[in-house]
Image 1 (cartoon, rainbow, N blue to C red):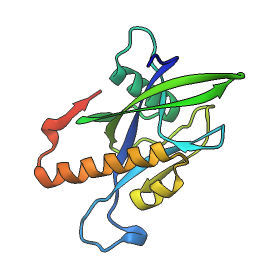
Image 2: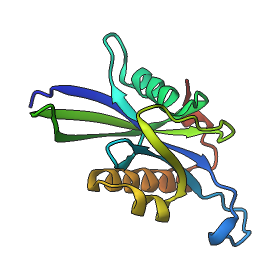
Image 3: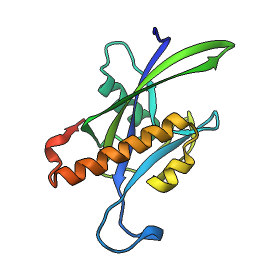
Length: 165
């Protein structure tokens, strides 16, 4: 299939504090995922069109920076998912393909949303999966979570699987 638009983005997460309502105090740092509220009304992950001469990773990093103000990200090697969908733009149907990566941030950066968004939220998986609007985003989030869980059980040292941008 030929796509009218190609984009790149990421499921961006930070380590949780292990406290709060799901608490337990066992030192488990459950990830929190960043969701953006788009002006069209849906909740989704940071993403945007790949510009000429950019790699998919470069585009994803740029979009995260432009849409959230976060530049301290590390891509987690081995996770890449592509989704495709159709949407209407000025009375024309557009076929779009988006490649998503998994990326970690220190969480120290304050989120500064762009004009494309009205809000943002850091949510643990159970809340994030309820907040995202579209099924393909829920499926993507579930795949990212499963990847993180399998990666953490296979290795206690993940530094070799990170790509700093």
